[in-house]
Amino acid sequence: MSTTTISRASTERALELKESLTEVRTRVQQAISGKNKEAILVAVSKYKPASDVLACFEAGQLDFGENYVQELVDKAQQLPPSIRWHFIGTLQSNKAKVLASIPNLYTIQTVTSVKVAAALNKAIPAERSSPLNILLQVNTSGEDNKSGLPPLSVESESNVESELTQLARHIVSECPQLYLQGLMTIGSLTESLASTEKPNEDFERLCLTRDLLQQALVQAGLPPDGGKWGTDGKLLLSMGMSSDFEAALKAGSDVVRVGTSIFGSRPKKEITS
Ligand SMILES: *Cc1c(COP(=O)(O)O)cnc(C)c1O
Image (cartoon, rainbow, N blue to C red; front, side, top):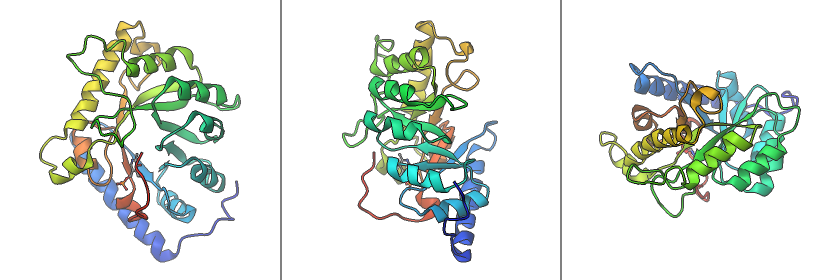
């Protein structure tokens, strides 16, 4: 657990990271100005060395996101225990145990099945002090290469019966070690890149899905004041990446996941979850 053993970023790299972090933070603040709310900036450090994470941490960054279980496990072991780790990659239930054993894992943003939720709930070690925050991933763009459950829609009579609501109900009622915190989406990036003026339909779809899911939970006898889900009676929304986080914040996002704008570009080989 010692942080003294990991290699440190060069002075030049540390300064570069500090500057890009400051710039992204300023842009986040500008995008939420006048909204009377706070936003969580998750620095997405996948493929980047632990020394980069440490440099950002020392510049005041607390929240970091990772996509791969083993990479997260390795980094969490080397880096300060006060970091809040967010898992944002595709998760299979057979990896639940190793992930759940990370004491300072703060959220898993990509839960899409009862099977994974149940595996996580079971795998949380007894010594963990607070429930693990869970976000459900929604495939707002409907693209085949994105994971996530279908969004809810106003026309649908069966929002209470939908997969998303069923999963939310399962977590709230059957998983005492998990806390349903909100919803996450990636959305279609090409569209949001093209124009920041035009509202991104995927972001609007996630906002609507949140409202409908909240109604469905109330209908199912699970009101927010039971302290069983959300923050102050509302599910949080995690949406927005380097290319679209300002648009996402303007559309009502609470959590943005920014990698490239902080750490620079990554090797091309990756597949987005
Ligand atoms: C990689 C990744 C990000 C960060 O993407 P950037 O475009 O580099 O900001 C955000 N969310 C998810 C789910 C990712 O996989």
